[in-house]
View 1 (spheres, rainbow, N blue to C red):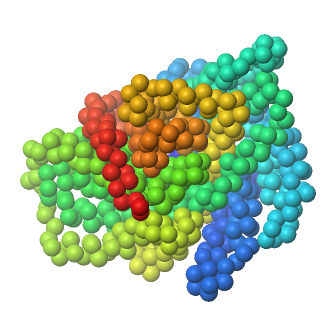
View 2 (view 1 turned 60 degrees about the vertical axis):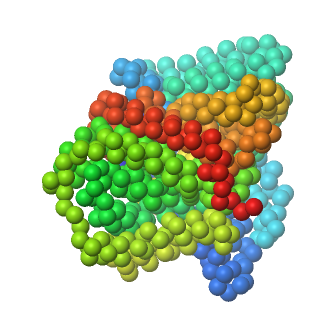
View 3 (view 1 turned 180 degrees about the horizontal axis):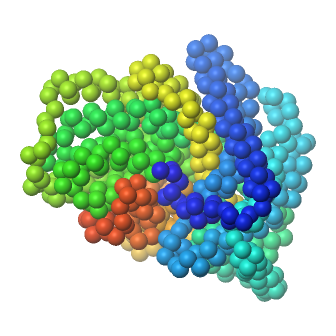
Length: 629
């Protein structure tokens, strides 16, 4: 199962025409292989450099002053090359809820339009990216003493490679009629905006609706990858309605992708893949199964508990679900559970566990709002428990009459043995979270320790380590990380544009005047982020609206950690609730189930999640009760 399928439909953009010239196919393969190899190597080097820094600091008490700086330089290269890999593999996040429902000819055109839109944005940004990198030549890095252009060069190089891949994809994937038609639609749109430039230049915040609502919505619903939809809207807004140079977009892209906290993103993604490959996830599930399999609805409780344990580490909800469902679903079906109910509960647990550290959404909130990562890690554990309990209550009601005649109760010896086997695996997620919360290590440092721990456990304890999977896992890590980081960069540019326009002050005033005070603000936030979660996914929505709304929440007297939990859970419900929540369709794909079969059972689970969310929102202690005073 592709871990990005909750965000995209890769095959819609990947399948080349049989009549594509052989030289074009060979060029695409050569470029793709070279970029994938370089990106995978950069991920591996990042892990080695950061782990060496941790060992030097904690074991020898001699920090490597250059390690973080070198890791930061290589990180931007990894992110940009990972974005190239994601584009080649069709794994950039895009909304396909509407695209997937139209007729095949219309879908073919929209898929072509998505590639063309990415190509146009990249063509517009390549030269400003080069200028930005050129300007960075005069800056010298403090530890290594080299020109910062070595780091900034990743932006024009990555943009140029993505432009090449997009062009090849455009030529491979469709007829000349589709190619010219999609480019013509974009050209007409640009022509209209240019013709209206004198009028738009005189407008005030109405331009924000035109570009950041209208153009973004048109692109997102047409299936254009979200990063490029954000980028096109921001470029258009700045180019047509302001005098700001286009290098500002590249600067914000660089700023958004280069935050030190985000160094942990690829490391946690790789760690999640290691946990699955080494059999650690299966060991955790095996123990919970032995413990609860004989209880009515027991395997459903195991599903909820397993998602709690493994969630948040891989960086992909689909990867979390894919690690658990194949182990549990066959036995659950033998006990009479219907496929629709299984995928419904799987989706609900995906939403329930969004706040569990080290969730990439938590790391993103910390990077864009300045909220303490340790506080977010502490605050995220109990809200997920509350939502898990509401799900378990519904499971108890639905399965209170389950036939257990075929269920076998595990003996105490079997339970103890499975616990001993699973103990190293169960300990890892809690050690990671405790280390960050207690301030023992940063999220980046603890992720490298987790990787080393997983490798040792896989080799020596579980004796399950497939070296042949290592390169594909590194490539997969680079691809997912590049897709995430490009969205963060593009959304940072859009958020900066909104701030420059004065919109943030207007929004603060409007939200402060909301009837109902703090309760009204929280209620509107829940509704807004459920909608945003179903359309934009968690990370882009957070990057775009977090810097605007978190200061308002603070003004309204809402604790920032409490507000973070409300926002994340709301977006999770939106992400996994049909008909637009694409996480639901990922669960259906993993469970090999027709989406229509899960619609009825998921309604109850979503109501249970909403009840839990209301409880979390109404009782701040659930989110902040364990924070250090």
